[in-house]
Amino acid sequence: MEWDDAGIIRALKARDQQVFGELFKTYFKQLRNYAFSFVQEQTLAEDIVQTVFLRLWDRIEVLNVVDSVAAYLYRAVYNESLNALKRSKVRRSHHSWLNRHMKDHTDAANRQLQLRELEKHLHAAINALPEQCRTIFQLSRYEELRYRDIGSRLGISVKTVENQMGKALKLLRARLVDFLPLLLLYFMNL
Image 1: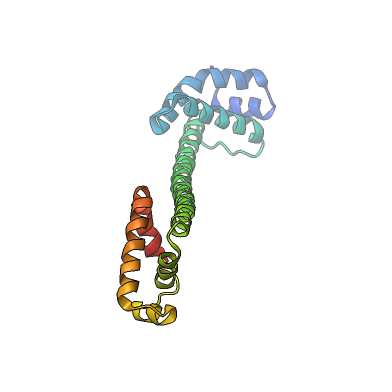
Image 2: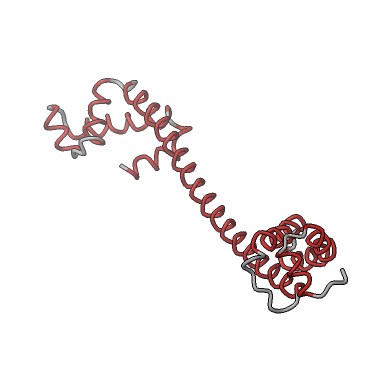
């Protein structure tokens, strides 16, 4: 392109597509390489340069190109590259937050499913206990009564309560051996 900057600007303001096309052909590769030096991604660098040229075409009437056209283009590519890096940083930060947030929800949902499964097996194991054993276990664990209070309520000795609780725990451990880690978490969260 052999025009001076003032002539190029006049031609662009007159919407001369041929001058615009020549300007694009003359500077595209150089500007793409310049943008690439910032963003380190070929496609993004090309998008940046195309955005700069599109804005130049759309806003030529209001743009005040003081320096050379080349200087204006390089400055515009520089600014657009920095903006692209900022947007990329914000996107990465948002994706990181979203991944952590989703992982937390997934983990919580998995724990809820495991606890529901555990509760189902625990209730089945408790219901499978002999009646007196089950009653004593429920009074101890769910109503939080002491052995002496259980014995008074049922009219049996404290020693019988102790024996029945030992029997209940042994039977429950045997039935719930696969769920012991979850069972510990369950009783810790009650």
